[in-house]
Image 1 (cartoon, rainbow, N blue to C red):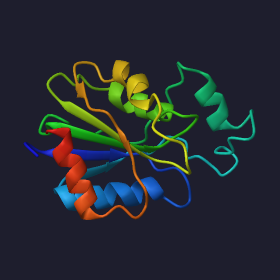
Image 2 (cartoon, rainbow, N blue to C red):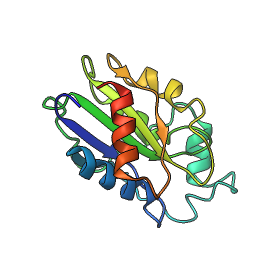
Image 3 (tube, rainbow, N blue to C red):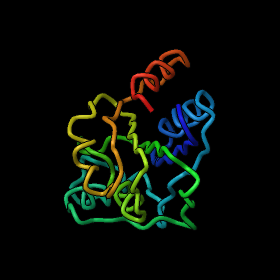
Image 4 (cartoon, rainbow, N blue to C red):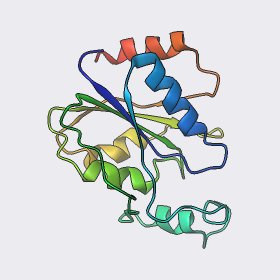
Length: 162
């Protein structure tokens, strides 16, 4: 991999699966880490996708929803590649990922989405994120299992051609 990389991730569930994958990825490729923390934390009830009135359901049913991020966002000027990790929600990335990407002019950067899921594939996730990553070259994303080996991660990175 050429240049410096940052792993920016959003992990909402108590299992913190996306965070675990982000740390493993950072260890394997020697990247920096940044956790995308919502300004208002998600409760268990907020994450109940079976409840149409839950916060996550309301946000995901509104394509213009952009949940706020807590704290200061990182300076991306020293990074060439930004990996963006998240759980799959309603077959796409949670809208807080759009909030993150839309904050920046990503011209000349490479953005690589990665996800965790209880079983949903990446689907059209990358295509849905592309408009939020203005100026970036966006690579096709990948869904990770919990038991990913460093060798499998390195193979994926090599296949990305970055």
